[in-house]
Length: 73
Image: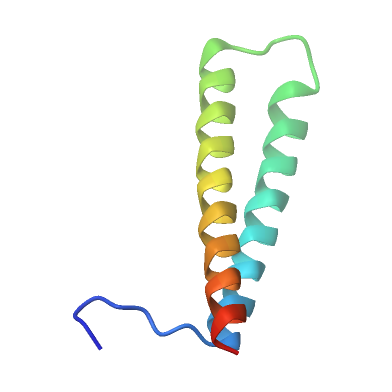
């Protein structure tokens, strides 16, 4: 195994899925807290955009790892 190479197993994939779920729950709470009234700021919109990019990247990485795991098993 090469340095910094990740070993994929079902436990890691399950943990990553739970992290994604938690990130989506955090996004839901953020939207409810910041966008439920008419006082939305540019900072709120920027924060939302950053959260969406981060979650999208986590989801993409997770999907790639699931595909890699499926090919090996």
